[in-house]
Structure formats: structure tokens, C-alpha cells
Length: 150
Image (cartoon, rainbow, N blue to C red; front, side, top):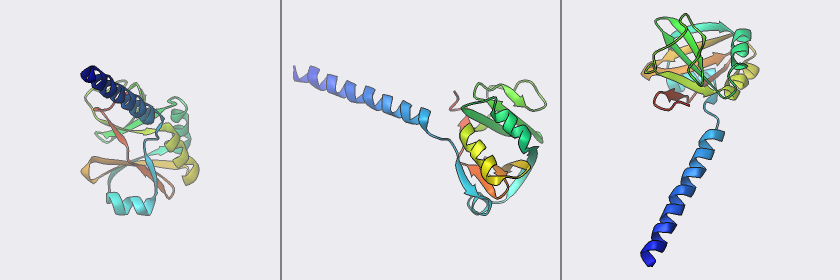
């Protein structure tokens, strides 16, 4: 009887903690806003960058309500939605194993509002770090897809 009770308690704890973690992940914001100077200090110098018109980026964020993915491949900027549909880039599809960095769309919109610049820059830095800068504001702390995709 004690073994059955212990098993039920342990099972309930595992299930309950899984529900809490899934709710936390789905409601948390992916990405963190930094000043440009702070991002340069933390993540190092920009090694490669591509500029996109901020109005165009705003139009793209309107098409992806939850998460937006970025990568620079062969000198070309690719932007995807959370289902990995190409929203901007020279190709209409990308390989399923190509790693993209993703942010919550809300943090990208916050960056645009705070930076208030007419152009936004997607930047690659050391250690495969991808940042997005608008004006004097930069976002990082992105997720990687794969392994975590939606």
C-alpha cells in the first residue's frame, strides 16, 4: 500500500512539474534587450552583418505572432516564422537541419520601438552568436532551432 501511494505521489509531482515547465516556456519571452555598447562588450565585435529596412522588418513581424527566426547564410539574410516558412530571403525553403536563431516577436517589436532607427542590422558575432540591432539597442539570448523548434 505504501509503495502504491509513493508511486502516485511521485507521478503527480512529475506530471505537475511538467505542466509548470511547459506553461513557463510558452509564456516566456525569448531574447533580451541590451544597449549596443553593452552587447559589444558581452558578445564581442560584429563579424558579419546584413541591414534590413525597419519598416520591412515590422511588416514581417506582423506575419509571425509568436517567434521569428534569423540567420545569415552565404551572405544572405533569411527570416523565418515559427513553422520555418521563409518570410524573407533568396530561397523559398531552407534545410530542416539548418540552425536558425529565434526571438519572441514581442522582443523584436520592442527593439524596433526603442531603437527608432530606419534600418535594423542582423549581426553574426564570435561563437555563432546572432544579434539584432536597431539604433542603440540590441537583442540577444536567442533560442536555437533546431534543437528546440515549435
